[in-house]
Length: 474
Image (tube, rainbow, N blue to C red; front, side, top):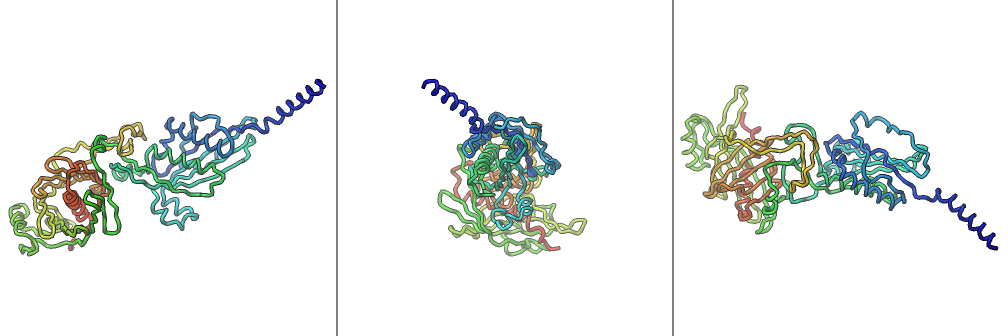
């Protein structure tokens, strides 16, 4: 009897070992991750070993959860950075081992700008709102092969990136703002890593029916030497909301709504004739400018209104009209205190505009480094070659606001960056060309009215300079 039982046990054991390979857990080796971006250096984030391990852990988790597959290597990703020519080539497949339990995985990660993607893929043409919100588009796909190089599984996913609001400020990583080179990053190194992690969860989930998803990611900035990290612990960042010709922001006194009103060009002193709309002190100041005697003077004027406070402001920029050798009419701001801000009929500020400031700037952006706009620990070097870029002051306003001396330094292409000083102290930093897109309040004791008036001086006048000159009489 015992002999028979031993034979049965032996037979069962043999059957178990015969059946075991068929039921054994499959292993997956990541053969290659091909990466390409037509937008900027974002794929260099994936060359970082720490970020590779984070992505591989997510990949291993998704494979185990969704397919009961195990990743053979969770330490390093075999990255290949593609060129445009490489995109047209088939993936070269090496010889695989005959191990039937081993599968071979290839992942493609391609990034493109929204215009190219949404106009090139008719599948998403109807979603115009998504296209308008999109900063960049990432296309993820994978191919899973067996040892015979037969396709076992494949899938693809499109990720549209948009910005989420963060307490950060700086010059966004866009080389068009600086040296004209086409390079754009939509998010930080951490933001990009999290994007790939989420993409993998969707990509390897067999129950996911979405072919496109939208993710909000933190913005990324050039690293700089003019915003220290301590500033964020003692300052406040305001992000105004814009709609049509109105913008609003939250202040201690409540929501402030500013409506941009009429703008125009007015004669101040033409052929020696004084226009009655202007105060006598202005003509007295102009008469003292010997170098401008005999010139005609005009004013670029813009009106703004605080809707809830029922206060109307006007910024008036006075300049000399001149005729160039090419017969084009130009506007030359007068470098004297002849420009002013009025509230209703009261003059609040008088200031000069200097297009060639004497003080040397010491503000730099590093075009080869990016960060999250808050912490130096988030710096990522996209190029080992140092590439400092001097952010030069191109316009300087100096004057008095309610008898308090102020200065405004306008820097960068299109005056994209503004630094405001009041009574010798730097009180505000502003990003925005024609409107204050992000405002850092360094001095929290500033009244809402003072903040508003300084913003109107900085932005209403620069808007007038850049957008009204084409309307000068020819």
